Length: 331
Image (cartoon, rainbow, N blue to C red; front, side):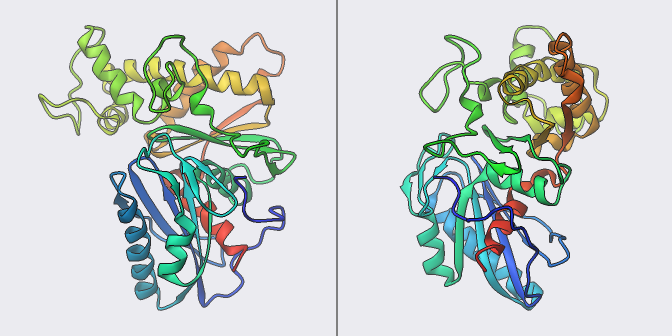
């Protein structure tokens, strides 16, 4: 159900240089948009908060698309939208655990009526996976997992070069694997879901918990403000500044991330695992911490060294780039 575009292996860049292929990524808290050029390059990333307001999501797509048309002097040929959650073949977002206001939201219809162009709506993690497989760090790989760490966790899974959707289109909702019985409550209604421990937003929650329990001292770098809870962005900036307490937090966080990655590897045995989402902007320290934890878990497995782990080429743009590629295929 997730895939709306047929013949996904027939990839091509935008064919008409006078038309824009626009892509949007609707996450749990933000919407991001860009356009894809016929040279494979992407424009700057526009970003807005939507705060779960469905009307604001549509308004943001219209506003950003209009800005792109004005700044480029070109018309929009198609719009692709990646959205967190379960998306049916008509572009209706059935449910989204991290945007709880969504219930059978006809996102494709709403945007198409406002913009009067062809629109395709796809799961956001599938968009990120397709971007990395077609133009990114996983180009040429046939079996891979692209895991997106945001408010929640989603994954795009490619098997033999094709996106794997599952019988009901729910494949890739890996953030809701239960890794801790009677663990932290999740918006999906269960307890102990992986994303409660390893999502992008979980890094800040973990840092605050470790401080309360006296496991780390004060983090005193960059974005940290005295008296305010630590955010993931603040912890990430502190890691980049070599703050020793923040590095301790990242080390524990990476163990939770690697636990889920190990489970996925045991099921799929991919050539590559690609890490995407805003949290990956921490860069090399993030990647090295994940690798260290992951290979410690899998060091007894004969194929452990064959699974490459890499950061997404497109970083926070991956979902938007993939959505633009999908949109281009219906232009």
